[in-house]
Image 1: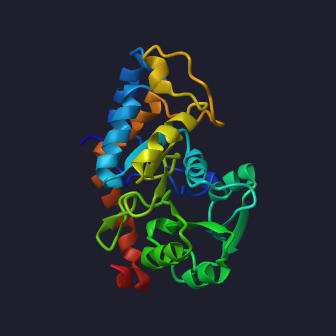
Image 2: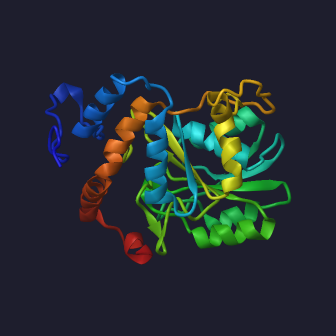
Length: 288
C-alpha cells in the first residue's frame, strides 16, 4: 500500500503555528477514487454509496445493515427517530461528550438527562445510569470515549429491565470490540462519524448500523425527504410522503473516500493503537 506520506510523518510546523494534534489521513486511493467518481455520471448518492454500505456492514455490523449519511450527527438523529423517541420522552446520555450526541434531541423535544462519567474511563457511569432510570426513560445513549467500549453488559441489562434500546455513539470506536463482539453488532443502533480527524474520513459523513432489518426502508426514506427513492427510480412517481424526512444522504464522492480508507483500515487502526501503546493505562489492562 502506498501513501502520499508515511502515516506517522507530521507536517513541518513553525513555532507560531502551534502544535498539530490531528492530521487528516487521506489515502492515495481516495484521490483516485474521487477522480473516478467526478468523471462518472454519479456524483450524488449512487453505486459507490451502496458499495460502501455493503463493505462497512461486512466489516463492522455483523448481521445488521449500514445506512450511510452526511454526518455522524445525521446518523444519531436518524437513530433517535427510528428508536421512536417522541417529545417529552427522557433519554440518558453521558455528560462528557461532543455536542453532536445531544443536539438532535433539541430538534425532537426530547428531555436529556445527563449521567456522570467514570473517572477512570471517561465513559458513562453505569451506577448513575441506574439511579436516573424511570418510567419516562425511553433510551440510553452511550459514547465509547477515545474508542474504549463502555460496559455494554450492564447497560443492556438495565435497558432490558425497562424494555428500551441502547444507542451507541461509536464516533471514536471503529474496529473496537467488546468481549469478542464488534462495536456495531451489539446494540440496535450504532453511529460512526467520518469527520476529518476520525479513523476513516470522508471529509464529513457518517454511518448508522441497524440490527432490525424491518427498519431499513423507513431509514432510507427518512434520509431522503421521506421519499421512497428506490420506487421513484424505477419510474413509480406517485409516491406519497407520509413522514417527515431530511436531506441526510451521503454522496458517491464521499463514499469513494470511505471505501479507500476502509480498504486500508487495518493499517489505520494499527497505527492508532501503536500511538496509544506507550501510555497504556491500568484500566486498559483490566478490560482486555
